[in-house]
Structures are given as structure tokens and as C-alpha cells.
Length: 283
Ligand code: 3HC
Image 1 (tube, rainbow, N blue to C red):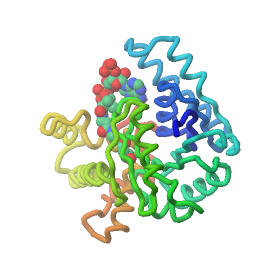
Image 2 (cartoon, rainbow, N blue to C red):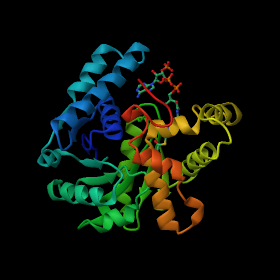
Image 3 (cartoon, protein in one colour):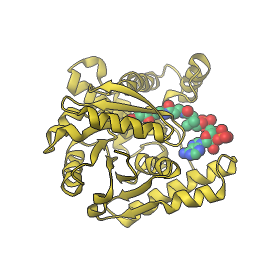
Image 4 (tube, rainbow, N blue to C red):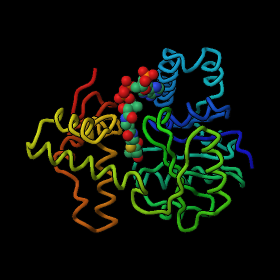
């Protein structure tokens, strides 16, 4: 089945990035969120990112306008009934994702595939809440979605081969590179990346080095494009914390204890770039 229309629930950083990439690849996109304000913010993010690509001559105005014209926004879940694939890209909360996936299943076409862009929540657990778990696939994009080439395709215990295969095929059509992953906490990339970021918070909390030096160390000593603390600000400190908490709970291993400083910054609302302040401050 060729997927022509993509539904996305959640117009945040990830949802808007996925919408942009899909619209640029020629798909019709329907983005659903709870409020017009959230949808407007999502569209503004897409416009900002397309503008950056145009400023660098990586996109012309006609392609930009055509992509924007392919994106529809709505607060009505019924609109998702037109989609061949519906991706849940909501905040990283199990209860919220379960609620949204059930709402999606209630309006989805019988042949539609459902996907979750979760960073760490079990696809098997999410699938168990559905009447038909074989149609749910993990489709994990990376931030910033327009620039990061990887998509992890995660198969839960009951995920069907047809659904996983269709999601893989769509990933390639989006110009991204898929890797196949069996369901496991944090999948592949976050299992390695997020504990490393957490360790950087421990270094900061222990006063081993200032934030800038920790980041410079990993940029210049390990060839990372940005340091781990700057990366935490990019992905959101709340996301990093929730992934560590899933590891701690699911593996039952103290090596996954979240750094108390990370928890405190999240408690203070310092979530990173999206709130203007995390480890660093942003204008
Ligand atoms: N849309 C379009 N273009 C963008 C953009 C966006 N959202 N963000 C940055 N760009 C462009 C810039 O315009 C610039 O273009 P140029 O190279 O042609 O001049 C280029 O990207 C570089 O941007 P900047 O100069 O602003 O900043 P950097 O040099 O630091 O590059 C970056 C930005 C590519 C994001 C780089 O910092 C990077 O690769 N960082 C690591 C990202 C990463 O590891 N992401 C994974 C996070 S983990 C995750 O998402 C999983 C989740 O579940 C937690």
C-alpha cells in the first residue's frame, strides 16, 4: 500500500518537523493538536525551518509554498480518517500516548498503520492498548527532524511485518535512513546517547568543569557536532529526564539514575531552547 496522506498528532518540535519533511516529500499531511494556538506554533516552526533552508539555497520559494499548501491543520481527530499512516508525536507520557493512540484507532481507516514517535516508551505496551496491536510500529525521528537522517523502526512484540515494512518504505520516501530495532527501552540511539548526556549533568553538578568546557571537551575530543549539555537543551531537558526515568524503571538498574541537577532544572521549568533557558540561555 502506497501511503499518500500522513496524519500526525502533536504539532510540537517533532510533529512539526515530521510534517515538514513529509510535505517536502510530496505527501499530503494532516496535523492534529488540541488547540489552534498549538497548531499555529507548529506551522510557525515549519515556516521558520523552511525559511532557513531557502536562505541557504537548499530550497526554492515554489517548493516551499507547495510544501506548506500540502499541510492541513485541525483540532478534529476525525480528519485523520483520510490518512494511510498516523504518527503519534505527543509529549513523552505513557498515559497521554495511550489515550491518543486509542483516539486515533477509533477514527483510523481499517487499513491505516499507526506509529508512535516515542523516545523510550515500550511499543509493546502501547500496542497492547489497541484492539489490533499488529498495526502499531515505532517510528522514532531525531531532532531536528529536517536535518537528522535517521529513523529507528521499532517492532513491538505484536507488530506485524506488513506494517513495519510499509513504515520502512515510507521512511525511505521521506529521504531518511531507517534502522530496524526490536522493542527495548530507549531502542538503540537513546540507550547510548541519553546516559551520556546524564553523565554530563553529573560532571556539571560535581563541579568537575563548567558547562562550556564539558561541551567543548566532547566537541573537540569526541568529534560531536554539539556538546552533550547543548544537546540536552536542543532535545529538551524534560525529554532527557523522562528517558532516564524509563531506563531506571524498566531495567531496574541504578546505573540509570537521573542526575538530581537535571531533575531540578526540569522542576524549575528550564527545559532548554523551547523555554528559552536550560543549561544555557537563549534569546
Ligand atoms: N531546519 C532547517 N535548517 C536548520 C535547522 C532546522 N530546524 N536547524 C539548523 N539548521 C541549519 C542551519 O541553517 C545551518 O545551515 P548551514 O550548514 O547551511 O549553514 C545548519 O543547519 C547548521 O546549523 P547551526 O549553524 O545553527 O548549528 P550547528 O552547526 O550546531 O548545526 C545541528 C545544527 C545540525 C542540529 C548540529 O548541532 C547537530 O548535528 N547537533 C546534534 C543533533 C543531534 O544529535 N540530534 C539527536 C538528538 S537525540 C533525539 O532527537 C532523540 C530524542 O528521542 C531524544
